[in-house]
Image (cartoon, rainbow, N blue to C red; front, side, top):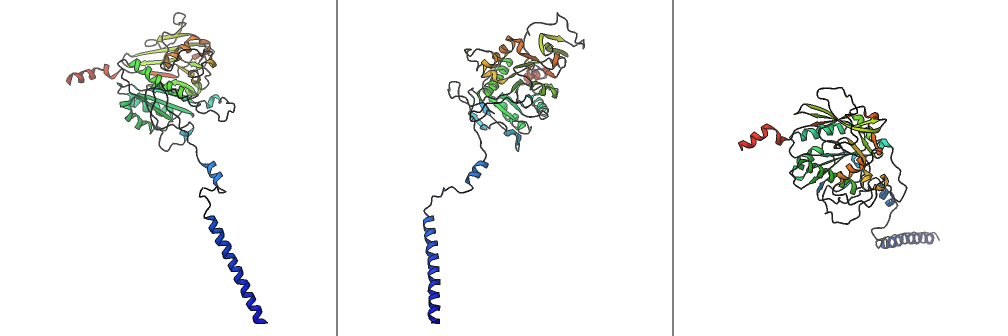
Length: 369
């Protein structure tokens, strides 16, 4: 009997082992037919953690656009990224513009940001013939690094001169977009207006919502100025001190205000009298020419004119946006806000430097050739 019990136990052990083997074999066999893209337990969390990069199409202007961000910068991700080098389509393209950057997704009601959180869009044009432009750009970059974010610096210049500027901009630590153009101009003012139109077309197409100011490369700023223009709802203006190095002249150009309300405009020479005593004869109801460094405006006027009381049946202004902005600002001074209160403080100084082509040594060198 003992030998019979032992044989029965051995048979049961062999049956169990064989059963386990068959089960493992069948499981492995059918697992091999499972698709390799089967969802696992961690796939959902992995998708949630993966970053999303949005590529914004190029603006509808005839220019070659180069967008470069400082290396290692983490603060420059607050705006949607666009391709580093894009050949921009012609104005005949009919692609609809993208939703404005910073808009809410999913149809939620958009909340206007607190004034101190508004994006500052500073546009700087680069002259071809100015030997000081490199130094001025670097000085302005050092100033902008001290301005609390959010801030976007748009630099526009001729395509053939862009390489050196692009190398400098990478080291500034300021969020920027570098735009170039290939057109040739003989009139410096026409070229500067074209550069501003390139920048405004970029702002309009990409719906960059913020406060736009044309920051000249040679301008000198009080840092409080950048905080004050964030309070602009529609349009803001302020007096600008113009310092001319070759003429040894100092003048004040801008509005005369009463509790932030514009009362008139002055252009007063202070070269021989540093006391700013304003009489009725010094004031004019309209400026002879609006100082390009003396105003700022809400960028939404470029694509939402009805919000500011403008009819939508206006002709297309995309090719001369800077003229359009001038007209809008000057047609209704009640929308203008003087900065600071009473316009009693100079916060922007413009250094008027002579063109390198007008310098005596330049003409002599040309003659030697």
